[in-house]
Image (cartoon, rainbow, N blue to C red; front, side, top):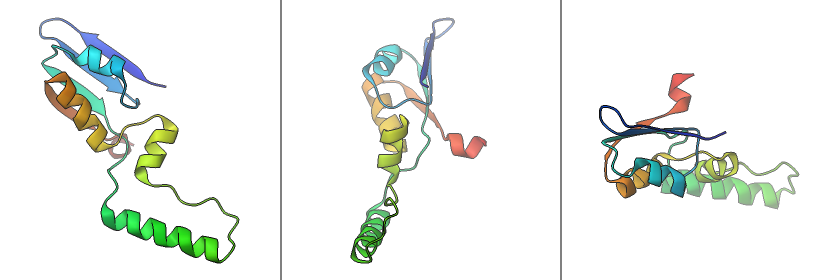
Length: 107
């Protein structure tokens, strides 16, 4: 479930918890001095994507019935979360200071 809050006093700031990038978050962050945006998953690297694709090819070649492992981007998309770079992009669109929190580090 996504949560987006905006506090106006004394300085405007916005907070997002467990949400994918969305226009309502950008709107809440417009004019804020600080955006706190939870980013649950790291970004995929070229190396991790290459390993994942090799694993998927092996599974197909072996006739595996198990669903393939997902990339961080796919997991974030499917679960309605943000990756680190998606949080940064929202912060850039809001034109404010961004503080990103990784939920996995807090549990």
